Structures are given as structure tokens and as C-alpha cells.
Image (cartoon, rainbow, N blue to C red; front, side, top):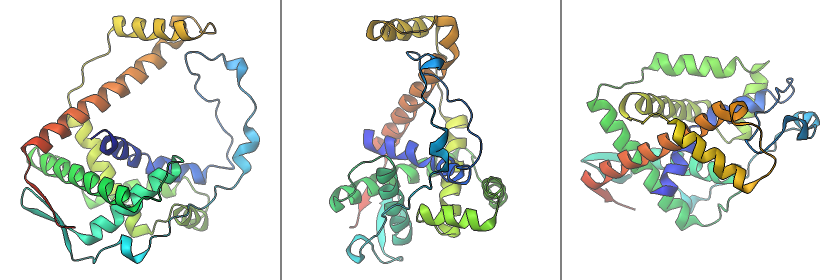
Length: 252
């Protein structure tokens, strides 16, 4: 389940990664500091932005794919077809490669892809029950917003190619991302970060490093980090609950 959660959260970053490809030549903002770093300690990385992002090695062999109309999963009676599996398989492989992880184990890729599809389908079903929907107009707006980050259509298409996307597969990914983001906002309850939790985190960092700024200088950053952790934990608990109640059959 932990790997499934990591993949889910990683796939939410796809648009950010794509836009980053379009902003390589733009002036970079000063990166946000970690609690144990001083701003003056940063090395100048401005030259890195001029380097072209290499295309990912996302070759997928015939034995890694299935027929588009093959039923690969049944989740609470809903059939998940091969075209969704093939797209999710590439998404999974892309995420691993982007994070410098091994993507050569086909059995592992298959297992993680099926787990991700199960999670995505359960979230989609629960979102529908709660009236959470994403329209074609929502996807179109998100697509145009992404395209607007590129100076030319050619630059946008080059970024898609670097990430092994077609525009249709990217739109499908956007649809999933938008629904999951809305689901996180509307259906996942997350407790607020307390001052005690902030102080505990800060003191833990201080124990590990002598070079720590005053708490008031990094408090907002710590809160953001703790909020992200709480969101991950709450989402994992929700998906675990949905999994326990679901009827799931794998057909491959």
C-alpha cells in the first residue's frame, strides 16, 4: 500500500514536471530552504536551467502490454480494460525513472500498476458517490494552462515527447489528477498542525544539525511539510479502508 500511495502522489506531479520542461530557460526563483540550511549556503545552480532535459527510456515491449479491450481488473463489479492498464503501466514506469528507481523488473511494474489502478478506481467510485466530478471543460482549462507555460507549440510537443506522452494520454492523466486532487480537498479530513507538532519537528531537526535557523524563520515551511505528511497519512488510511471493503478480481 505504501508503494501505491507513493505512485499516486508521484503521478500528481506529472503536470509540474511537464511545465518544468517548458521553463528550463526561464529565470529561476530562489529555492525554498530546508530547516537546516542557510540561504547563503546555496550553490549557484543557474547554469543547470540551460541544460536540456533528456528523454526518458520508456520503451515498452509487447509482453508488457495487453489488448486494449481485455478486462484486467474488476473492482466492485466495474471492469478496468487493457487500454487503462497500458497507460498506467507507462505512467508507473515513467515515475520510477524520474525518481532514479529501477524500472527493469516487469513483474514489479505489473504489480504496482495493478495496485495503482485499484486505488484510482476505488477513489473514482467513492468520488462519484460523493458527487465529486471533473468535466471535459475542467480538463480543457488545465490543458490550456499547461500549454501556456510554453513559448511555442513545438516546445510543448517536445516536452510531451520527453515524457513519452501523446496529447490524448496526457489529457487522460490530467483527468485522473484533477479528480484525485478534488477528492483530496473534499473527501479527506486532515487534522490541523499544532504548535506542539511544529516544536517537536523543529527540535528533532536541531538534534541532527547545529546549523538551524530560528524557529520563527522556518515555522511556515515546517507547517507545510507536516501538513503534507498528514495528507499522505489520511489518504493512505482512506484507500486502505476502501480496499478492505472492496471486491477486487485480477484477471492478468
